[in-house]
Image 1 (cartoon, rainbow, N blue to C red):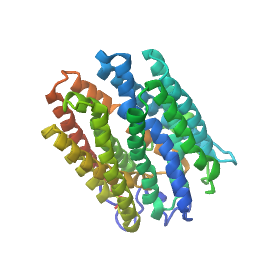
Image 2 (image 1 turned 120 degrees about the vertical axis):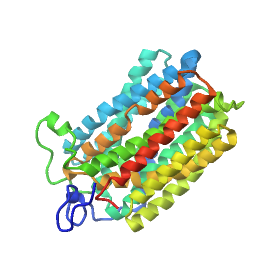
Image 3 (image 1 turned 180 degrees about the vertical axis):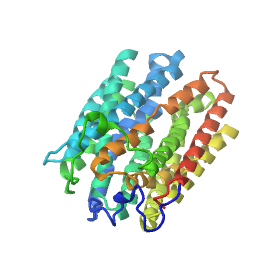
Image 4 (image 1 turned 30 degrees about the vertical axis):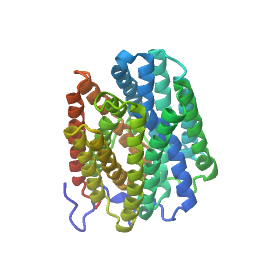
Length: 425
């Protein structure tokens, strides 16, 4: 894809700040960004911990002999439900007209539903009941996701979207590392861990949702047409960069999740660490330290230069190198190096991914829906399908090598996708 010739409007130019009066012009405060990040921390506690460790623990408790199969089923239920729910929740959020705030109404409702169902998951050992509760958790997550994501486009000016993207991304890593420390080292009881994380998520979300409000004006017009019409994605010919940005996010996140979702089993079955949960936590803390620094630094660079694509490319290449190091040398030393590389790479990617996606939205009237479609696609169950296929062939050392090789390939495809975006530098 090439940029449109000079003097001719491109398919995405209506979203650019110079031509679009709907793009926010008033800077958000540091307090707004910190509280926004805290709300995302609550969301990520509900999202990251199940996929990374809590569902693995639960599956192992329910049936140790079928732990990989059950963990994959549980992850698949969550991801498929989000894929279906996010576009619908985004459509409804765009059409909500309440003086008190259309976005935060959905975010509050989502936190309430997700946290209640989340707290109950750990209290049962029936696979069908767990799956039913995970469906409710995913619906609540979808409500929070579309509402908070749309607030960036509604409220944050372009030259602050790198920092807003960091406020979206850094809490993801903090939630994972801090939450893992809590549920593996502090709380050794699975049922207790699920309700404690649910409570913490709500506590993190309330200050922003109850204290900040929504000062940005509503879009000029609400979406019109039938439900089916408004749930239909934008046409690829009209918004090609939107779909390349979507592909970039889907592939890089899927490649990352292919490797990290089975980390507990990797250190247990491939590295043979005597205390796999502590080993997984150590790797996660290394990952956290590098990721937080990289996210903050890259976010500042993105805001000062307004360049997104080079940072996404660097992030994807570093994560690919991390996966390859595990595929080529499944040792503890290689795992520590991979954790550092993955942290820098994913932090760099997170610092600009949300900003890049927001910059290429095709229509300001359907921001929640369009961001919802991207986030829904991000949750396609690629990782559990790949993990299940590779690891259940035979649980051997060589299968983990193959798993991380596949992870590297997927992230390389994500790096190629971002090069196809023409309207953002």
